[in-house]
Length: 256
Ligand SMILES: C[S@@+](CC[C@H](N)C(=O)[O-])C[C@H]1O[C@@H](n2cnc3c(N)ncnc32)[C@H](O)[C@@H]1O
Image (cartoon, rainbow, N blue to C red; front, side):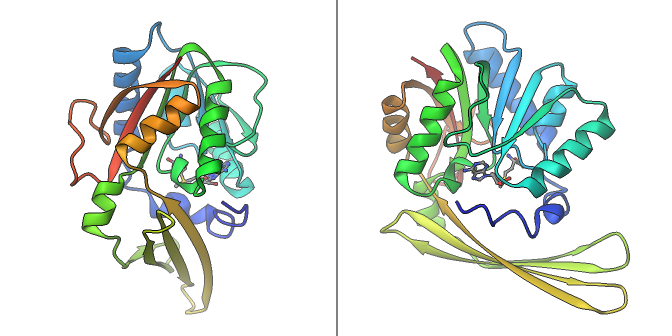
């Protein structure tokens, strides 16, 4: 990923994902911890934490959480939200492929396709290796990623949605995806159009490249990075078997 995406629209991110069930996803994360961790998880490293969607609820639930992100815009927002919530979470500016927190954690999480943004296989391998470096033996790594079997059957679709900016203006987000099966990615053109209450329009555009993974491929990449894959399931339901209908795949791996 280049560091220019999630910059222009970083401040709009929370608006676009206001209905995403972060608390429910944190329930899922905790269920995975309880079921698969060798010892109770107390410290968490969130790779690609964005605006803190998981960092803040997990911190409120008593975990010591550190989030890292490449986008300063997203991090600034996460820090402001953490301060407002009285959270003790900490944040680092860095790249999930090589950031060094200088310590190990009980668990590493990477939620909402962050792993897919490491769209070249070597970049994804670097992110996995870096997750491993931040875990002791038996530590847990949990992430969700687009599931190749579903992407190829369902195919990504163009969509458009209008939001109210809460100040009398509107924000329209239009997404145009192109599937590239050779590169195993979806290139997503995201156009954002803001119209102020006075009718003034402002437009911006981002290009996201997101890699999807097949189950066996995830297992191989994880093994190569020093993990054993312990559980793959539908996201975000630890008890539901992954099917070809599930666009999002959850992966829980243990540091070997
Ligand atoms: C779809 S957002 C997910 C954010 C957050 N995990 C959530 O669930 O809301 C993807 C995030 O990954 C970050 N990201 C992508 N590639 C990255 C990299 N190589 N290093 C650090 N952050 C990265 C982006 O800046 C963005 O904040």
